[in-house]
Image (cartoon, rainbow, N blue to C red; front, side, top):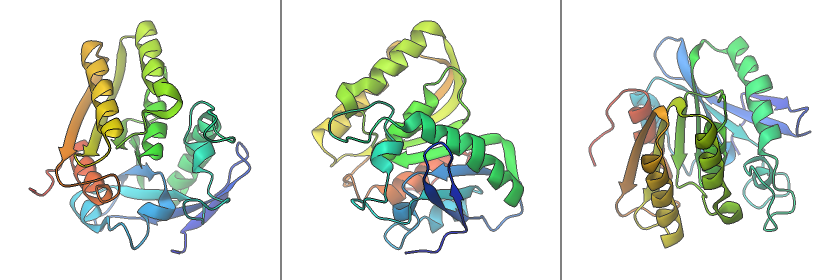
Length: 243
């Protein structure tokens, strides 16, 4: 397992997080992007070197030092906005977001030359559920969002209700959102993403720019590298490689 740049304990969750950092070759300041599932994204299985080379962002992997299914990996708690019987510890997303914005982000600003005005968060699957939860806040902290194959199904699609409730109370939500899914992902994943897209099109938020992609010949797992490369390029203003 890759050695982290540093570790940071959250008073909100009581968990020590492994923080992986990959800086671009160009001088800063850079936008920073917090990547969920850092144990997976910052591993030999997922090569994000192309994304980093083409888009000058500081990639920050938020990890547990433990893989999927390990008891020390708390993604089922941290990435879920509401509790659900599928995961007894679920529903801890708000506390985790407090750690990301209140402790981790200031620590990154001390250590690296980051752009304080451009703040990104990225995830895949359950990590993307957290990304959407971070977006659908009355005053979201982040400005750029990469949600790859989001787990909209969680808790009977409660994230769709969260977005609708927010839209009923405010009409504007400035930000940039990249959505994607592999075309060979499950019918549930592709269909639920369509539901979200339709909902946001029918009741749009002023100021929210949405970019959506479907990747052919990609499933839920092998889509991650191309999703991150394309999403980062789209969000931060560079054209991805043609495919």
